[in-house]
Image (cartoon, rainbow, N blue to C red; front, top):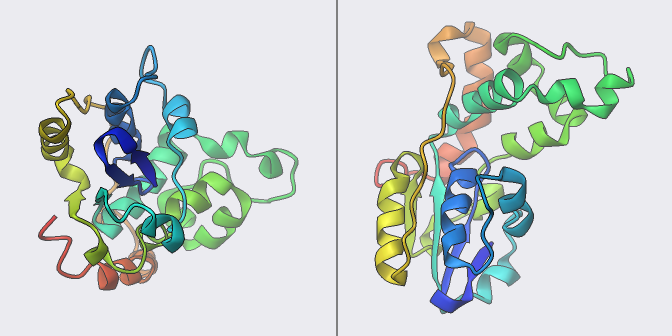
Amino acid sequence: MVEFEEFELAYVPVPKAGSTALKTALAALREDTPDADDAAWVHNRMPTRRFNPDAFSRTADFWRFTVIRDPIERLLAVYTDLIVERDVLAYAGDVQRGRINLPTRPDPDFFFQNLDRYRAAVFAIKHHAMKQMVFTGPSLDVYDRVYDAGRLEELCAEVSGMTGRTVIVRETSRGEPLNLGDLKPETRAIIRNEAAPDYAAFSGFLAAA
């Protein structure tokens, strides 16, 4: 949970749900801000952690919000961001040392059909592919507001109004998105099964957010 005590706001970030862009924007609410867009800087100062009910209860008087994303869209983004764009497997220690015998540039079908092996091999993949409710907690009813990752501008406008600070999300360049229909039927089944718990937990919130 990222707390902004001066404004009594608390943000619960979820990986691959706009968290880097939003943390960068929310840095305007703090005294120390990066000289330029720096993902490492914002994540070091505003870490993403698993839901902790005790920590959450300590912000009972804060206006608490989170951002969620369509679970299947989010899983597909794990592949396009971490594998295609960031090439995280090229720098994975266990892969480089030959301890994990996995392709470092897998096609999406191979990646998702071997997702458990990739999660075990690389922490970044494990972290970003965890269920969203690992970070939000099992119920979204505890939040004052739940936003959709595709509507961060609306979030920033509301936070700007509450704080009197200018909070702006900058456009980020994205590659060609991966679509579920691009994948083999057996891969689509795996992804739907992976996404099912979040769909069940977020029922009624995805459309509203």
